[in-house]
Image 1 (cartoon, one colour):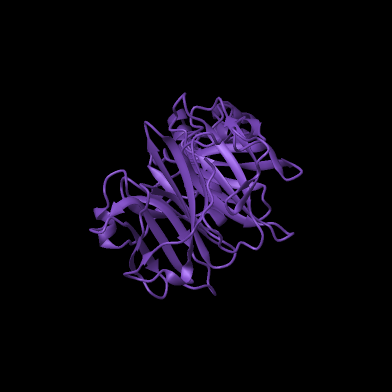
Image 2: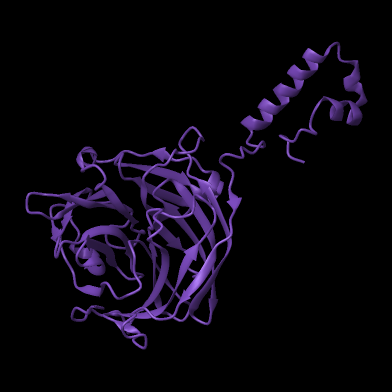
Length: 367
């Protein structure tokens, strides 16, 4: 029985504990019960239905071909297409997903929408092909006071063990969640950020976060990339927070692409997911590979394109990227789209495997 159930009342107390009938009056008894409930609430034993995780149903339609003009094609630049899913749910908070973490088992995942809602679940496979989503649940991200964030524009997420760092774009702040201990009920506490981060343009600010593990170049650094905060040269601003060498660096902006997410390869390279849109050409997606050793304060970094996809491929507003390595040694990239809660857009999950040993190759595109 939940402590908030109506059955936990005066009659129940008298029935289960006859001594309570000797209390001098009902007001005293009510005060006693209220005090107990307040204590239980303070201890986190009374669930708040408004912020509690709730199970949702998610339907999945398989994507067997990435290039609709050539369904037999499976190789795209440096990536091999594994499969995908088009996801739907009747839950009104489902959609708008802008960041993603897939655990090393390739199954359990955590996503975050740009309206401050967590999605947690499992990807079920048929062979290597994503086939369904199971055990899905959602919950609002919580502020430091434990209250729902109220549609935080949460666009990015990075993981350091059990700690999650989340970027809030329109407020240009980063909040820290102790997910390892408190799960979806963890409150988000703001962390100090570089003062210049607050000057990023509205709705084009923090878009990608990556935490660099220790024993790698920049180990212990939180890398924060803006969507389209530009310097005088027209390149995209990014920040090194903490770690051995904090500061500002820049990502070379080319072909009108803006940053939508980033993730680390199991080695020491940074993958940057980018997108562009025009009414005439539609949406395009690109992934660039940038050596971590290039990233130092003041540098402008660039790297080869792993894959570029345009209209004619099964893409939408691809905003989330996560990377894991299988026990067999394959490097798997998982992408997730933000449907903007629009009836003409879709929530699409795509998976690719890095071809060969991942060595850089000439630019490849899927047009």
